[in-house]
Amino acid sequence: MIKIAKFGGSSVADAEHFKKIRAIVEADPARRFVVVSACGRRHSGDAKVTDLLYLVAAHVRYHVSCDDLLADIGQRYFDIADELGLAYPIRDEFAAFADTARSGAYSTEELVSRGEYFTAQLMAEYLGLPFLDAADVVAFHHDGTLSMTRTEALVQERGIPGGFVMPGFYGATREGQIKLLDRGGGDISGSILAKCLGADLYENWTDVSGFLSADPRVVANPQPISRVTYSELRELSYMGASVLHEEAVFPVMEAGIPIAVKNTNRPEDPGTVISDRENYVASEPIITGVTGKKNFVAVHVLKDHMSNEVGIIRRTLSIFERYHVSVEHIPSGIDSFAVVVQGDDVKDCIWSIVADIKTEVAPDGIKVVDDLSLISTVGRNMIGRPGVSGQLFAALGNEGISIRMIAQGSDEINIIVGVHRDDFEHAIRAIYRAFSDGDHLLELKDLKKAEEDARPRVADADEKE
Ligand code: ASP
Image (cartoon, rainbow, N blue to C red; front, side, top):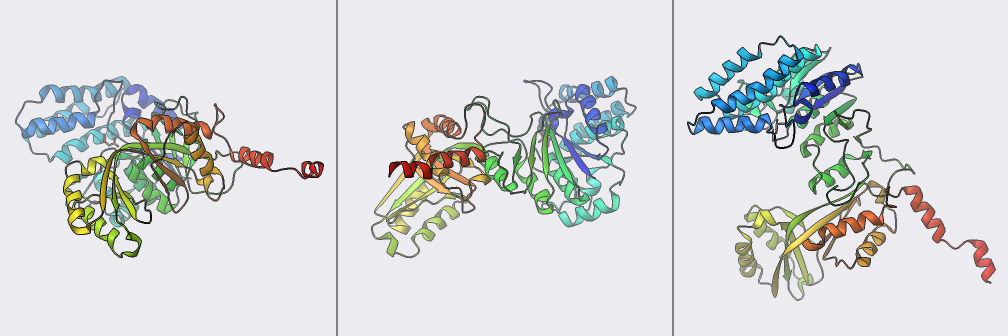
């Protein structure tokens, strides 16, 4: 049994958290492969080491002294090492790093990567596991993209079978030039490693007990999600829920390895398991979660007899493509359609796009609606279950919320509604309420019961005759 345990920034913020991690790792002999982020915030208002390192890089670039900054960063590592009595020569190593940083000899990527490097060095000693440098196994192409094939070969060749601690977030090219993944990319490193080692489980340890079925700032006490499929998670995180880096799903998904999102501060909490098991479980909620995003823009294009004209949608879309704007939805009618895009993507070019549509498509009318919010109700259990969308629309209708757009993904795992931005929170609460009994989300068995209650019983029918 192999488990990859990845600990995020808040989980390695200080010596107290290192102790929690050791207890977690020692509690399960399968947890021998550990990936760590750089030290994160110890409390609200604190800074993440990675952010501070980016700041150091900026100071160096503009020839501004960063001695205080470097001293603060160093102190965080010294405190951990001192409190845990570690022998790793962190003061010497950090001094050498600080000198090179000041001299301007590091690339920004290499400088920033030292955050995870030092964390992993200390963690390796504390856990009694060898240190494996990500630069030796996580392989990048020169253009900064990851080489999965070479990474797999290197992990086979250099990965220590008995276990190790590896820094997340970075890797290197063939020539040893350090490259970084996206911000928050330690999650991706863990996922890559899980795939390369053929792990049974990828544990992602963070400071929350998994995913919640709604944003707690909008819905009071939303129920935690105990299980979610990879595609549901893609929908939920794309639309707002952010616990795990979006890209972290792909390597393990391809390999069919489940992910468990767990809380380092409350390891006994069940957390969320992400896997592709899709069988029917009566005690599962009907919906998995409700989430949403504000600030969408819909460009409505109207033209009489549009349905007889070939190529009009293609011509409109090619204009968006020209401006490098990604299209989210295209709800359409007989003589009109709309192109829905993210507001931020068109803030500088929306009027150029409209002008181009006018000349190249010659519509009868064009209307820009810029106060659209999208709400996505996600749930694998909605598939093929009549009445769910009815319940959702009725909930919004009963609250007097007008629906401006409807879209359902072809895989039927989500229903997206567009509402005015002022109705955003209200609509999320209304949908959540429609699928919960106040305390808990309604389960499939409740739906069955409701269906049965609604069905006239044979005896009733007889009585009426
Ligand atoms: N330390 C990096 C960041 O803050 C990567 C990570 O934590 O996953 O973005």
